[in-house]
Image (cartoon, rainbow, N blue to C red; front, side, top):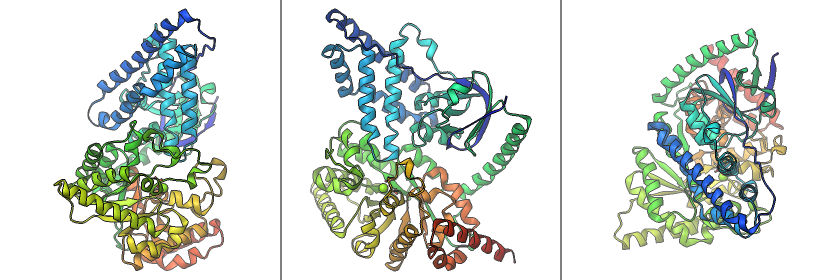
Length: 584
Ligand code: PEP
Ligand code: MG
């Protein structure tokens, strides 16, 4: 019988295959207290399980080659690092030796503690890093539970299979992608998880939050994932299969058409030039950005360097990472955003300002960097050194007022002097820009422009602050809505002010890569978009269909709208009209 389940698309596409259920790591936790004589053997058991988990990851790493190794290596290394994390290991040992807990109870307690830390994080991407902890501890836990039969739990998709799981670890995702897995249905998980990012890079359709999947689907059931519409069809009918075949034909034709755009210039229908930049966090993003013809990196989120390891990365480590991005872009500009950690995300680096009631309004971004000028100066020196290898710009997050830009410029000047004294080579010029994501900076942008060489509008945060709606709170979906006219007017004001001041302005929030917003942003006068490199071709394609002149002329009418629905309706009208005009 045909059954339809719904989920959230984490990677688009469709796939038809046999289901392969990967049961979640059921944490069989033994909560009894150990007697003294049991403690030694239990610690031994725990360490053996940790070793097994390490070996598994090591073996997986060894099996990856070429692009796959580059793409996934970072994720596996991050998991391996977690397994060697001194604090985590010490905590586990102490729970067993001092607390008399069993190894499984100790693992569960550490997992719950860390899950709470990640849960409290503000940024959805970082929040989803909690999944990594879950997956690493799950790996150790199942090694502990099945010390005798490791083979049994090896995940090995056979060609033509769709994996149905609770969540899926990036390392397993990579291994299974290499073995012919066609898609993933996860009953939990987030679209910001590493696995979701990988699924997008591998072009594998993936749904998350498909709640009843594990209870409904059986091994070997025929399933159709429709990650275009957020559906899983179990036992699809002939009609479903015909729809799938039609999608396949269209997707193949679309893929060929888009691939041809990788080397095409970015032009609107009426010939206006637009610059498309990439947002990057990982080495793989840089490769993708190049291969899709990005004009540069518009946002390099440097905090990921600080979150991938314990403790602070040294000046040399940071320099090497930044230089690699600069070299990777082969002479195209790279915009390095300085640390954007908030109090709740700073633990790994030990920078936390503890006990903030409202961390989103707390010491984050540049506020945090200015509290630690020594640490900030290390980053500035590393960026300055990397800037000798190609064009680099510095972007400062969470600017609220002009004084912060003045402070940053003073610290950059000092970093230059320190490097010069040490005999280091220095770049001649290095532009310093402000991220506009705090309403005060957006409203007062003219004064910020006095000290900023360029602007980048961070609409992810600007929307949450303008609309007073936490960007991670699902319950506020209808309010956290970038189509709200008041929000659009503010963005338009920032773009117009930068244009008047003849300074470059880009937009690097998620809406830059969402083709539903391309016409609107063009109407506002935006000429530089920065997005996940996976979106570059779609946006370039969309731009070729839009008449920049007609949209700009219609802008005042768009922004006078009284509701988000009115904005949408007027936009549709304008786009339809421009199509009509072009045909006559
Ligand atoms: C933004 O706020 O729009 C932005 C690009 O920065 P992040 O998502 O990293 O906060
Ligand atoms: Mg931001």
